Amino acid sequence: MHRRLFPRTLALAALVAAAATAGAPTATAESPTPAATRLNATIDAILADSRLAGAQASVVVKDVATGETVYHRNGDRRLVPASNTKLLTSAAALELLGPGHRFSTEVRTSGSRHAGLVSGNLYLRGGGDPTMLATDYDALAAQVAAAGVRVVTGNLVADDTRYDSTRLGPDWTWDDEPYYYAAQVSALTVAPDTDYDAGTVIVHAAPGATAGARPVVTTTPATRYLKIDNRAETVAGGQTSVSIERAHGSNTVVVTGQIALGAAAESDWVSVWEPTGYAADVFRSALRRHGVRVLGRTVLGQPTPEGAAEVGRHRSMPLAELMVPFLKLSNNGHAEVLTKEIGRMLSGAGTWSAGLTAISEYVADAGMDTGTLRQRDGSGLSRRNLIPADEFVDLLAAVRAEPWFDTWYAALPIAGEADRFVGGTLRSRMRGTPAAGNVHAKTGSLTGVSGLSGYVTDADGRVLAFSILLNNYLASSVKTLEDQIAIALASYTGKGVTGARVAPPTAPDAPRVPEGLECAWIKPNAC
Figure 1 (cartoon, helix red, strand yellow):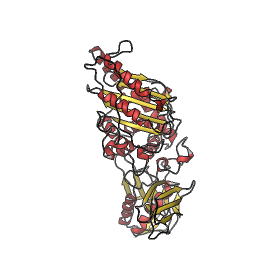
Figure 2: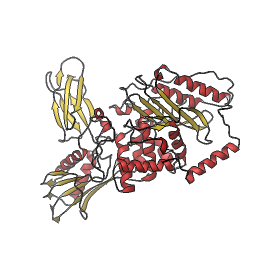
Figure 3: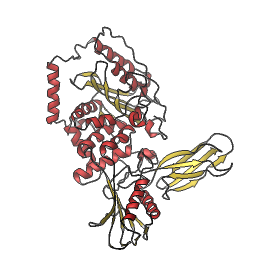
Figure 4: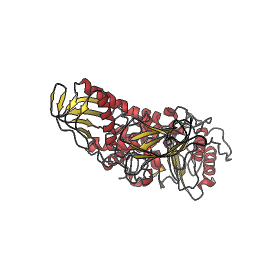
């Protein structure tokens, strides 16, 4: 599918043309202003850093009001964008689902009811909500009890059929599978805390009472769905070194290493195998606490029959609010759920294929040339995603005309803002510079892949859309190079500049995290 001009795209083009004819300042390749020459030289110097030797770099900067290209290097080159892919997914979700879209989780009964006895099954029907906490399942169980249900003779049926049964994204690597940022996707799931990392459990290992004792291992939320294989030891001296890993294809979590006597508990976030069963276990425990007994077994993946009576419902926060944890913390699970939800709502198929098709159609309508890119998942975890910086900048410029833009813009990470739900993955970057509190942008990281795409207001008050994509480098991190470019853009002025001396700005050190990971992917959060 290639670029198509739709009414809002034509309107934007007309505004650009009007601004140009009104005498808006421009810098062309043939006659750059001294300021533009200096900015180009500055960014060129940043990209000449030895960390990018043999790597690929693509940088595009545009003035969103005039359409002027402020800087351009390899903008048409298809590079792996990592989590910058979430820009497409989030924009499409707000447009196609709407800022007010909510997910519903329901409890229904089949068969006859007499007093508190249900002669049939109890159905827990998932609506895709990635924000369901154990407390939400407890509230659902309380509703069931309040409806007068005391005994269910049949089974507890966990209905996850809103989406397909493909749990892991296309092309995801096998070694990511046990980690929470690659959690399995289901229409029925549980998040352990208000970061809303659905399909994961937090495993805690605290020292035992005496040296030589096994650590005390607990989980958040409490669940019997995991089996703990505790091989670790409490030691009287020495450093704590604990490993918490889930074995492939199972829900056995192996705890090894040592923890010092009297030390604080060690915690790790672990994905579960088959989140539907995890949700059912948490809900069954909640029912038991509220005095509701289900005599049958737990059955996964069967649909709720038509006409089943509703006895409980939970509705999620609206999508506009979900954008904050999604984009600020670069939540992969939210991206994939939204992709499947888009497919379900638009075509009746809760699949990656259907969702990605709809996302592609939307971003084409918004002005991206989808014939030049490939999107394979919603989050950017796939290395087969290939998107040129030119197309990111086109999208960033176009969505400013959308009625939901302010919501989306505010949900992007903001440089140097310390609050996790304001600064997000940029909270520790560009502090004390002209970019702090200014740059709103999406980060992206995989091993050898880094990206930063978003907006910055320069020193003259111009809003610039930019995309920086860096691939195939061998250094542990190139984040400071992205930050230097963003700071240079925030400092840029076309007034009173007569020379073209290169002065790359200094950027504070970015947080140190293991190679290829977002700081938000390191728990506790490293940003």
